[in-house]
Structures are given as C-alpha cells and as structure tokens.
Length: 332
Image 1 (cartoon, helix red, strand yellow):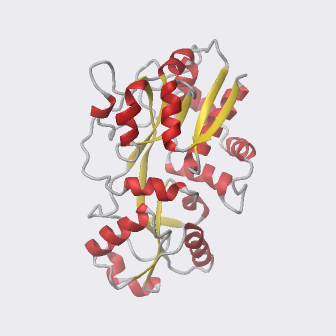
Image 2 (cartoon, helix red, strand yellow):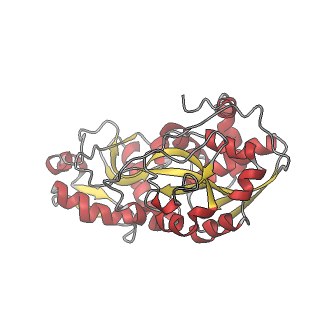
Image 3 (cartoon, helix red, strand yellow):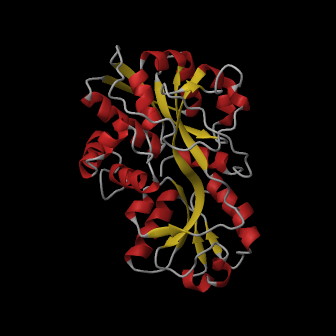
C-alpha cells in the first residue's frame, strides 16, 4: 500500500456512531456541497449517501469545453483507479484530460479556487471533515461512488474464525499471531487500542511491521494454504489478489465505514455538466474496485507502473461497464 495509509487511516479511527441523512446529489449532476443555499457544507451529514444516487443517462448531455483537469491524491490507490477510469472514458469521447497529483490540502484548495476541475477521493464524514469545514461551501458535490471504506481484520477464506472475537479462542489456528502494518498507521492504533482490548486478544502477538511485510505474509500463508490473520482495510486490491475475507466485528471496534465522494469547483460543474453527471453515475463495489486496483498495483500485474494500460485491460475484461456507467445503470 502507498503512503496514504498513515494519513488516511488515522482519520478513519474515530468513524463511529454517526447519524445518517441523504447525500447531496442532484439531477443536474451535482449540487453545492452543503446541499444548497440553506445548509452549510460543514453542517451536512455525509454518512448515508447511496452510490449512484440521481444517476441518469448522459446521452443528451454535452460539454462545450472538452478540456478538463482531474486531481489525484498522492499515493491513494482508489484515487488513481477512479481518475484513470474517467480519463479513459473522456479521452474516448474526445476530451483532452490533464491530471495533477497532490496531497489532500492542496487538492481541496485547488479545486475550491478553480485551479483543478474535479477529484474523486473525498472521504466523509470523518477523514476529510476539516477540509469540508474550510472549503466545502466553494465545492460542488457529485455524490458518492463507494460506501464501504473501513478498517478490517481479515483471514484466509477457508480458515475457522468468523468474528474477531473468535481469535481469542482460536489463536492456535493462527500461530497466535496477528500481522499488522506500520507502527504509525491509524489502522495499527485502532487495532491496538480498540480491537485487542475489546475482544480480549492478549493471547495474540500483534506483529507490527509494514504494509509490504503484511502483504508478503498474506501471500506466503495463502499460497501455503495456512491460516493467517492480518489487519487490512477496504478498498484494497488484496481482496482480489488473495483468498481472504473480513472477520465480523460485532462490537464495531474497528469503526464504521465511510463514503468516498467526488467534488468539483462551482465553475467546473457549470462548464462540464457531462463530466459532472458521469461522476454522479459512477459506482464501484468491492469486487470491481479490488479487481481494478489489483491490475493496477499488485506486483503480479502492472505494479503501479502503467495506469492507462491497466485500466484499458480492466475495461476490456468488463465490457459492459462503460455502457452501464453512461446510462446510469451501475447503481441498479
């Protein structure tokens, strides 16, 4: 996993017990992030958006201006995946697409000021809350495209544990070890301070190392058909690359799932109704997203070195995706 793990997962740590309301999407392909003139973006509850809300066919929508800039969050795999999906489709439609890779702060600033047109990786209601408080009233919300961004503890598919609590009595089946990632990651902190004490997992050695080391162990164990338990998160390509599944978390120790939203500046939304609606229509479930990221980032595939070829290959393997996307049918 890229360096975004340390930043983003720390934000997800406290994602729990959040009230639910509808997400701010409109039939025009987006609305001001606060949901209109009466609601400030910082006052809006972002936690109940359904991916693909207000989807519709883009056949009768067009942009006069066919030059557009798309922002990518440095090191965030799903940001590259969605951006290069959109880039592929727009270029097929005759657009000239520019991409900019930035950290979260400069990205929100740039889009709010109109220096960048669109980005697809706003994590809400928690991770990017502070940026929404600062810049949200200058942004347009184009809906969420994913609703299962969360921290997990995962095991190999055919192993005996079904819940995190099972590891307390089944530790021997997993060599009494839980493999973690970087010491400074929010995922590590959540596991250490929440999951382990709440489920009484003191019988396990929590082996903290790095994301590559955890993935290497996951590969080694699953290749050898051995039981293994690791800390993981969604979205991640490991769910496609390896036979793994999440343990149920009845105490919600790992926190609630977040939504991932697309945003633009106000001028970009007005100038690009076609792109806005295309983003409104976008829906990626866990299977689609994991398989796309696996092609793009795993060592067995493109290893992060040719996003355009990886996306083109994925679209060839999913031949109906673009047609359904443009018709607004991905949410069905």
